[in-house]
Length: 236
Ligand SMILES: NC(=O)c1ccc[n+]([C@@H]2O[C@H](COP(=O)([O-])OP(=O)(O)OC[C@H]3O[C@@H](n4cnc5c(N)ncnc54)[C@H](OP(=O)(O)O)[C@@H]3O)[C@@H](O)[C@H]2O)c1
Image 1: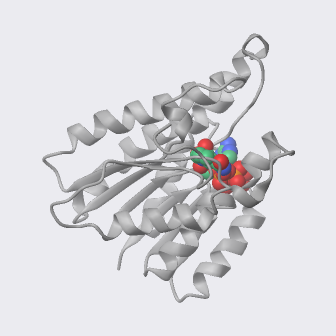
Image 2: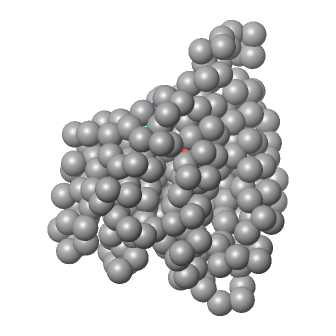
């Protein structure tokens, strides 16, 4: 049976991905800090008949990748899909950021995915094929006011994704970046409480894109998927 590890699975996009992959037949290893919410997701996955294990780890900690890896290998002996989804956003003027903000955002959005992927690569090499799906953002290619730190972290995640994809080109590992626009989750409503949520992308719509990428096992590979809100200007 196929196994997927999803970070940031306690809510939002990660939770939707976990639900979707469970319904597509994956067993799941689910990472986030909020163990109460994680255990709800574990129950949801188990109700589909799949296996689910929760791992309460803070990805801002520098030893988070090692903690996740050691927890994973105690329960699963193979891994087919790694979804680096967990992320945090801080919104403030450039001059107001402090070093602690840098560590908090960069550790979760860039450092942990980088080293978690490095640690799990030997297992993914045994899969046929192995998938790495990094949830970046439209902010990985653009800059927006008040988002200099979040943008730096997502540019870092996308840069790592591009280089890794090239290194894996002769291996049976597919490396994808997904770049969504505004998705209806607590991340957006927290930063923009005024936003009209009716036009935002649904988390389950992002999960559907992930699920479809995982079904592509032939000679066609989609490196990145940009997902825009329907009302936004195409190709902007
Ligand atoms: N929402 C959007 O508009 C949007 C657009 C483009 C890209 N994205 C990206 O999509 C991903 C998911 O975002 P979302 O919108 O679903 O956000 P969300 O609803 O705020 O969920 C974030 C997830 O990341 C986890 N997380 C945050 N900090 C963590 C930490 N220190 N350690 C472990 N887990 C942590 C959270 O779990 P705990 O709080 O339980 O730890 C939660 O499960 C992020 O990478 C985000 O940058 C979002």
